[in-house]
Image (cartoon, rainbow, N blue to C red; front, side):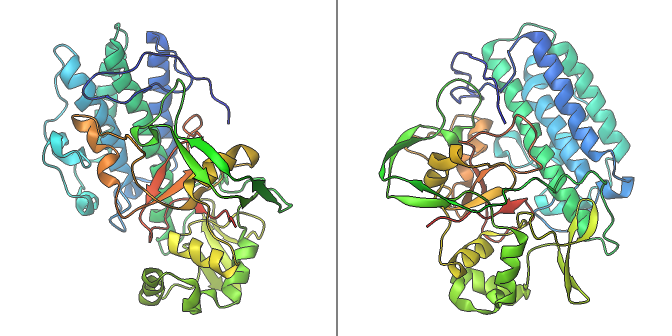
Length: 412
């Protein structure tokens, strides 16, 4: 996936104090910002088009937010951080929406706790779409004016924020429908089925001092900075992701029944939840099936295994006599293999890079405060919006979570 990076000055605005906070393929001109805004906003609604009204409200677990909430929250972001502080004479759509759609920004005020988002039968789906239209109309006028580089940076951050939630929409919708007893299909497009590398090989990387982290012009999040040197021992990394067929061998070999492959916490997770296979796998008449966005299907042995948590990824690697790559190893080798099919677990804890600093204000809450008890994933997935991936992107999740499109690449 190639991108064109627009060159812009460094940002110094207190809210958007992140160097190089510019988005791929956006030139910063007014018409381009307006067009990009409309395209991104329309894509969120296109993702939700196959849904029925009842699908918008469901929250099966705390980690999954109702689609209605995602649509409202991304709208709240533009209203809260652009229209209210910068648009002259802007009238807030509904003051109560700040409480409803704030996610985790302590500096912005009180909010509905995450576990209660599924209790929000009101505002209705129609009202949320009215909210989006109201803010979109105001943003169209706002983006017709000349903006300072500081304000433009917040606009572009809003674009990236909505793109993050577009991926969450796919994964949350799959969880909602995949836990409906009827296992209904979302659509028939089959975005999860991808062309895969058939021949497995191992890429050799020499010992040495390498650089990692974002560099150059273009957008990046603050957790991708600063670029720094790392020393790596010689290692090998696999050219392709672990397939369903390979993972099925692990299952058939009793992988979920042998504590020797698991971290202690992972083994407790397996025992307490009685896990025998990845999320969405079902054993029907002695044959494995899995739920996809296109409905229940027989396991495709050549597709990359997905919806694997960190515990499962490390257990499989141990069973194979291999390991997961560190994020530095992954980044250094990433130009030598195809990535972007699944978010790939690494053996790296989510920690700040050298000289990392949290910005003042709300943006300082975006990444830094989550740098504890999480592991880094690299790459992208079939649900990642086009133009929203890069080699230095650092995703992160807790070790037990499976609902994202995660996968496994081995190293040794």
